[in-house]
Image 1 (cartoon, rainbow, N blue to C red):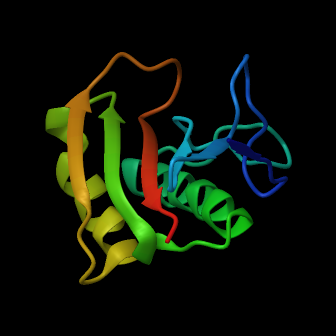
Image 2 (cartoon, one colour):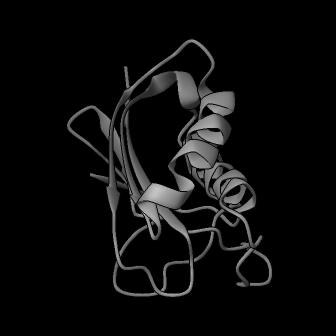
Length: 124
């Protein structure tokens, strides 16, 4: 097992790693729309917060020499599922293009943010 750490993504706020490589896969922690430098929430809209989450996830992927093309599974938690799903989905799709990993999107009670995501990527 290898732990992934990068200053390009927010530091863990608890006893967990940003990412772990195990058994041929990269697993990330759930990440919110936090600026890695300031530790502050970025954006007030679901679109702005989704961009920040995707940037944070991309930093972890890059630290493991991977990209969104290697992502095979995504789990998304939205604070306001019915209100924000369409805006989230449009923004999310702009990062993946034609590559469509499997995804679960659920409504969740989140602490002061609109979105949290984690991903699993293949490590060929």
